[in-house]
Image 1 (cartoon, rainbow, N blue to C red):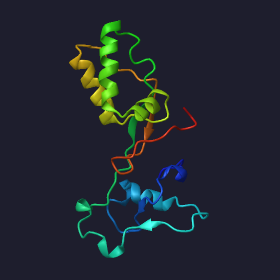
Image 2: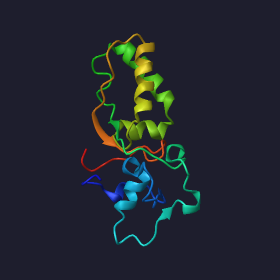
Image 3: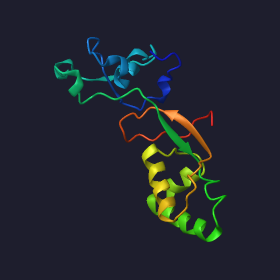
Image 4: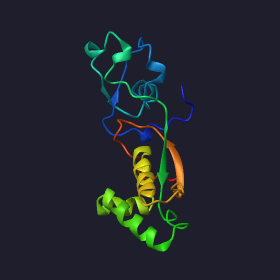
Length: 156
């Protein structure tokens, strides 16, 4: 069990798992959050025990406790790239995200998932830039449901 788990980072109405007999519970995020529910939380959303799968390896509710590396900020992304290529890349990156999302990323209000970082690296390759994209900073975050992208954290 992780010692410094912050329950405040758990998304609202995140599905918890109360199955103590699951062989994968040690590496399941849904079980980890259940172990850290503070007393001040009056209720939680849980998996119905009638839906616990017979084979833990096939559990549709399982989420890994392995943290992913999220990137924050793109203010220095184009610093070492020739101006014309930087303009081209900036335009290509802006098309990946809606305008408000792009500006939230630019101002470190929203992190970039590993998949989004790979998309940006692909654009670099497409523009014949051999340099690996370097973002302003990085954090390790849980992938809550595979779609959750963390919002700004005070420790950045």
